[in-house]
Length: 509
Ligand code: MSP
Image (tube, rainbow, N blue to C red; front, side, top):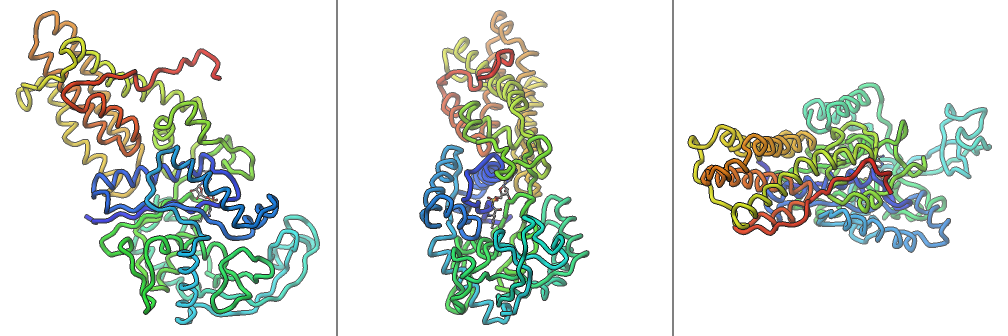
């Protein structure tokens, strides 16, 4: 097994406040980071997130706000950081592409690639729409006009720098055939394979004339050019984690052979991560990530949730209304990771009342109530275990013994990041325990003076609570901390029910 784990989220554009979609990737990455810290030790996990700050979009948003681009991004970055704090995101590093360490690395990459002959200048000719600041190919024009705004276009000729993407098509296609786990899930893998089989890669235009776009990383060997924002952005994954030495060799403890490197992204940015990025790394002589996992979209009705569609829901509103861990749980439980899902508060309330209030919350609360009532708050020690245990208790023991392996199979070994299946496996234990309470009828054991049976019965429930708390802690860190506090030592400290049921008959506030 690998000894290190490096996980990243996309770096988010700062032209808008983060919505549920952004929080989804970050919560998923956080859960995996927390899980791997338990597995490999704190210092062997690196979790990176950050912000993508250059380019036209940001420059325009800054202009609209009457600020310089950097002043503008300085006002938005704290909004992201605050949200991540509220969502209990345990990132180890937050990279801004406007930071020195990043700018330096991007410039170094450009110089190295130029020296290796991977980058060349060439004249670029196209139809340019000045208001849209977009180049169009002849065949894209509509009646000779811009297909977006329908205004006249101008023919522009300019020199730009190109990266030799096309030279690597055969190499990448072969690499992807040989590494079916490089892109996940399988549906996205197929998409990349098809794309490579059906299209011829063009070299990538990686510069913009600085007179058109000033907010970008200047080319070290051509001050008239700034770096294309995607080329700049992808490099964050290496600029945050290491450095090039004087010979142009990249050194990083997180891109070593023995580390697992995972990029979590949404399916909207698959091509950049599964085609451009591996080729950039190959050209630089850096190992490739193990997995690019592209999850699905949160939709509102038929539409993707996005700022431009004006249908965004704020993560903070949901957290304030239902609680942080409920929100985290819902996102990872309700829709299989990889597929699209429709966001609905109704389903969230259903999960709250069902899985959380009825199952988990109830198990903890009723167990602690019995410990209070029958044992004065002291957790009883178990007497009959193994073959002496009651059959239902034996089945529970067996389930607990395999629980961590089941969770691991979904979150680490197969790397299918099937959060839903891991949670289902945890809930199987919770449900077995609740069923055990209903079948055992502890009040009768107490009435009949069957003290040993009562002790053993309760000790089994405490075992379930402790094991599930451990398995669940990467998903719901504060809930599990509260469970540990209540039932972690010899004497319980019972609190209020963890998830007081939401009355669905009342109209919600
Ligand atoms: N800045 C680029 C990424 C550069 S990475 C080197 C970018 N930023 S973004 O702000 O637009 O964020 C895109 C990411 O946000 C998606 O890939 C996905 O992780 C997340 N989501 C944004 N909207 C989403 C949904 N509606 N549903 C799920 N996640 C989506 O692209």
